Amino acid sequence: MDLNSRIATTTVIQKVNPAIGKYPLAGTKWKLVSLNKKKVDQKGKNVYYIKLNSKDGRFVALSGCNNIIGKFVMPSAATLTFSGIVSNKMDCADVEMESYFSSMLAQTNSYKLDKETLTLFGEDKKEMAKFVVVK
Image (cartoon, rainbow, N blue to C red; front, side, top):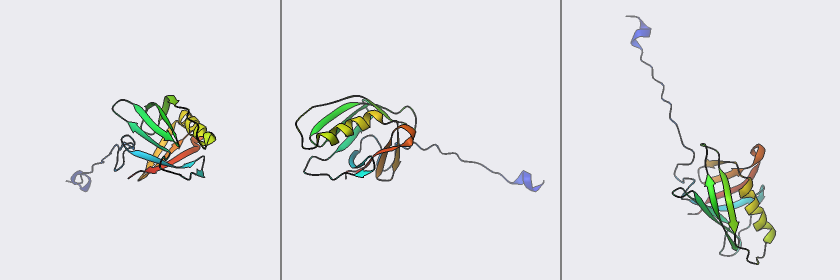
């Protein structure tokens, strides 16, 4: 028997879903830390955040003082889109920032999870927003 016949080799290919981990994409509350690569200073008790619910495909977010709701879809492992985005329109201190936050969600088409950080990307992989886990 030659050496090649006695060597057994196996290749293990593990498919990893990037939406699942210590802090999964859905079910985790994500606090906004940067928008359009600019640091977001969270003021007061109402922080900017997003939370996705995998059971019904909906999300909830807070953009300073207004609530945002809608639907999300993950067509593949690294793609993510938001639709049906609506929010209440209370008079808030930073209306421009809140408007950009909603607009960013509508333009999102992919994401990346890296430990405790969620990054949302738009067209041409442009970084639109970065979030961290709310513990």
